[in-house]
Length: 412
Image (tube, rainbow, N blue to C red; front, side):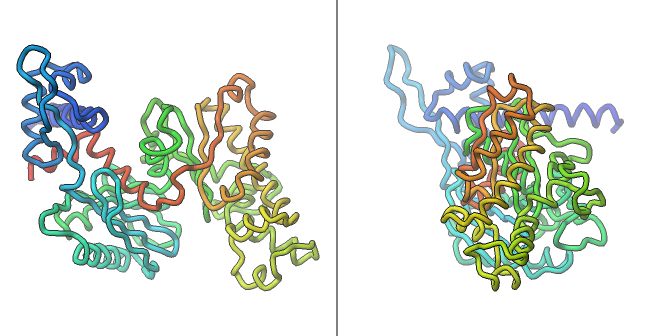
C-alpha cells in the first residue's frame, strides 16, 4: 500500500468514526429521539442514520424505546442511550494515591477504591495499576456487564494520542512509558491517557461550570499548577500534545529558583507546598497564628488546614492566601490578555477558601487585563473538584463522542 493510499484509508476511517460519534452524541444529548430528528440535527440523510444506528444497536449502548405519538403516518421509534449495560474503569494517579472507579456510561460511579501509591519506577506503576484494576473488577463487575475501556489521568508530560508518558513529576522514568498500550494489552480493551489538568478541563466542559461556554481556562492548583485550555469547544494540545504550563509563568523575577531552572515561577509562590512553606516561615518568625507550631514544623500542615484557619479568622493564613491569590491573578491576567476566555475555573484545595481568594483574583485581573476582556470574564470555583473520577471519565466521554471507542467496539 502506498503512502497516499494509507493517508486516504486513515481519512476514511476518521470520517466514519466522526460520523458515528456524532450520531451517538445526538442520541446521548437529546434522547429519546427519532431517526428523522437525528438526521435533521446531524445534517445527514435518513438512510445514513438508519445504517449508522444499525451498527450501534447491536453494541447495546443505544436502545429503541416506545414509538412516538402518531401524527398521521407510521409512528417513529425513539432511540436513547443505554448507559448501564457497559462499564468503564477510571484511574486517577496522584502524587501519593491511586483513585480507581467502576463507572457506567452516564458517569455514575458504581464502585471505587482509594489506595496508596507505592510505585517507585515504571514497572511498579504498571504492576500496581494492573493489580488494583483486576481487584476492582473481580469484586464489583457482573457477568452481564461488559468492560469496554479504561481511562487514566496523571500529572506530567504525555502524549494523549500514543498513550505515552514522557515525564512524571513523582515517578522517575528511565524512558518514555507506553502505559496505555501496556494496560490495554492486560485487559484487552482500549486505554485512554490524559494529563490531569487538561482532563479536568474536559470534565468541566462536559459536566461542570464550563458546560455553557466554548472558551474556558481551567487552572488546578496542587503540588504543581497547570491549566487546561478549551477554545471553540476543543482542548488545545500544542507541540508534543502538551500545553498550559501556567505554573511556569514568571510572577516574581527576584523569587526562588523553580525546579524548571527559572526564578519566581508561579509554582514557587502559589502551589500548595509554597503556601505551606510561607506559613511555616512566618510562623517561625513569630507571627501569631492559630495553626500550631507542631503542624508547621512536622510536615502535617496542609493547604486544607490553612484554608480552614483562614475561614475561622486566622490573620496569618488569610494574609498568605491573599498573597498567593494575587500571584495567581497576575499569571491569569497574562492568560486572559492572550486568549480572552469566557470563563476561568479554579480547582484544588485552595478553593476551600474561595470567599477569601476570589475578591483578590478579580481585583488583580481587573487591574491587569484589558477592560473589554475583563468585563465579559467570569471567574468560578470548580464544581466537580470533589469527584476525583470525572476527569478520567471525561476521556471516555470524548472517545464516545468522537467515535474511536465506538469504532473499536464494532471492530471487536
